[in-house]
Image (cartoon, rainbow, N blue to C red; front, top):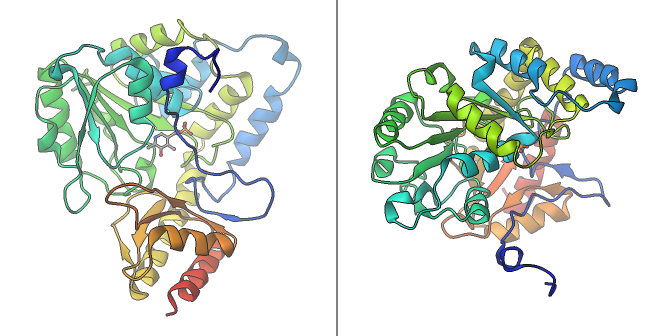
Amino acid sequence: MSVYWNSRTKNLKPYIPGEQPGDRRFIKLNTNENPYPPSPEVIKAVQKAAGDRLRLYPDPACTEFREAAAARYGVQPEQVFAGNGSDEVLAFAFGAFFETGLSAEADVLFPDITYSFYPVYAALWGIPFRIIPLDDNFSIRTADYKIPSGGAVFPNPNAPTGKALPLADILPLAEYLEKNGRVFILDEAYAAFGADSAVPYINDHPNLLTVHTLSKSASLAGLRVGFAIGNAELIRGLCSVRDSFNSYTLDRLALAGGAAALSDSAYYDGINRRVTASRERVSGTLRELGFELLPSAANFIFMKHPAVNGAAFFGALRERGILVRHFNKDRIADYLRVTIGTDGEMDAFLSACREITGV
Ligand SMILES: *Cc1c(COP(=O)(O)O)cnc(C)c1O
């Protein structure tokens, strides 16, 4: 800490991203990246954009990208906001829609076990929040969110549990929050792997902001493209925050590659079917080996072994060249979050699990 840091910077507790090793070759199952390459159309579009026109600022309205997203999801371009990864979209959404007031009725609600960036954004903006524990089966209980609040945010499927909620739970909560004049941010980072998206219902719920990323389901974590879909007035609020910060958050390469990705659903449906098939196969084998797994609707599994401590298991996998994610946190310290890799990577992972548990 430096004497030059202001008190706000001194008080930050930043998010800690999963390790990106540079030194040694790992089987990397720790940050939910897609094991398959991006669509060839994306590579072509990025290469085409990497030319003379880089002299010029990109389109601040992200028109081509928003049109591609609108066509893909059956919405209007005015209902789409584009950002530098969905992390940025989430950060802007916290700033645009959640209050910094002091009354308990202004607290933003999110689960105890969820994406660990939410409390970081709340703290950055000075937004008070209240943590709502998952139930004993690690499910989000939407009834617990039907209380006076400043709004709510969670992923569906949730991370790191991988558990999805049906729209029959999501939509009544959107309606409850709408009646209370509050925004519901639904983070659909992993929806492509097995949850029903709420996007078709944004016209019914003007307070529902769905947040999406190309990092996981479109194999583009390195390009940094995220977006939100919701009521056009919510989108204008996001633009207002963005344009008070940086009008060009997406560069020309990201805009071109992102639009190409959204226009090639056939390719992505194919690779993501492979990911979900591997998830089911690996889950079956792990259960046979005595592991306990939560039912996953995402591209990762959340698992533990009754006889092996989570931190020790993480270390034993790392020694064998396999990186997974361990959260040293109440209730989940014995669990590991394991991204679904290629079948070859998952076979190596299963062998390591057999070796470590001795079965
Ligand atoms: C990975 C992830 C994000 C962030 O995605 P980026 O678009 O890469 O910033 C957001 N929410 C959840 C729940 C995630 O797991």
